[in-house]
Image (cartoon, rainbow, N blue to C red; front, side, top):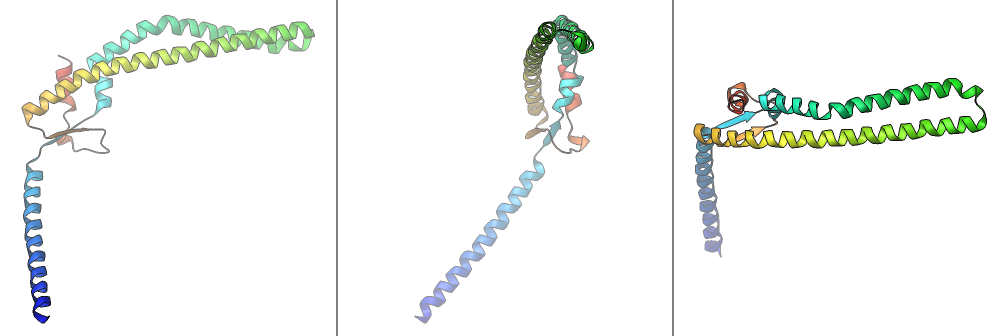
Length: 177
């Protein structure tokens, strides 16, 4: 029995040593791959805010939504005037006139809030559509840049990135052509 346990101990020691050697070899190979990997980073917010496409999209949205915004502002001013007038006249109004004016103010407020909500939703949807178009074009440029410059990975939204790996300016320049 002494020989079986001695053989088992030697076998276990050889397996442990083999695992250590294999682990070290794999670790070294992994370190060599990591050292040769190329990483790039970009700021999507800069792409959405600083590119010519983003400025053109902003101008387009402003033009598209300015009539609705103007109408909404006018409705808001009417609501404010009606509310102030009702508040001022309320003590002198009869019961029937007070209820009628109060209903008018409430209906005007409901209409204003509904239109404001619809405006915000429509503007948000259109903004997202414009951003998606910009993102699609930027993604094509980023892929091409990654292939030509040999990047293994391109990251975005990092907490911090070394300016040495920042490709945002290159993407902006290509996007603005």
